[in-house]
Image (cartoon, rainbow, N blue to C red; front, side, top):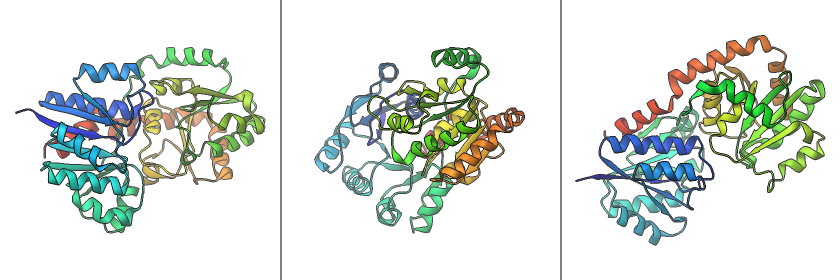
Length: 358
């Protein structure tokens, strides 16, 4: 009899990004092993390309909001009849409801992935109901362990999925799109529009950096400039002309090819896929010391700074811009780190074989 994996995302999919690629590769490898895959989203994913690829793998998509709705959870699990449930981005109450209902319906295996630090003490009991708890960074795993979460903890990041073969051509294309000359230096960041990503800190730092280096531009990918308040902040800071909003788009990593340096300004983070994508593109990195980067995974790939600190980020960016001769060395170091630890296909293989099948 065909077995089923139910992947509960507790989220929306607004583009074809790193998280979507991770799930798609998971569905692909599960299919090769004879598993059927069902995925839950709050709404239908917006990317037509992503929907096409899901359909091509015969993935069943269920759109339902589960928060504070045990009857919908019951219906979802009863209808899917899964052998394995893998939960992502759920709060403690939802994790508890899913676990209780899944056990009542005799689901064989429950897996949760922890992407950030959220109420670790409350999770101590809830996560004991799960067979496996995957943390996307050692920082999260250590906090959970310190808070008394049981020994079913492990670390596995999501990794990056990209083909950098045409990066030179893409660089020309996107620099042309944003009217950036070959002589100008470009910083870039991929982030959704949330305070946790620290884009306000990045804009304030960029204002100071641009005062010293007027030939520097900033590209931000993942923010809707029509609805976000961030472009107004850029105008207030007097840097609007030098900041380019690439919007929410599929394959956002491709825009990174226009950059010389990748900057991650997050106040808090789990396992930032965008940093891994930057490493795969051999970009030197400036990043706050949070999540996976606090584990030391940046290595020799770039410069670390203090989160939620404009002066610290400004200094890190200035230090990076002052040593362009080191960019190639840092980029190669990051690429080696990516090959060793962050290749998405290998990480999904570990997930499927060590967690689903074990």
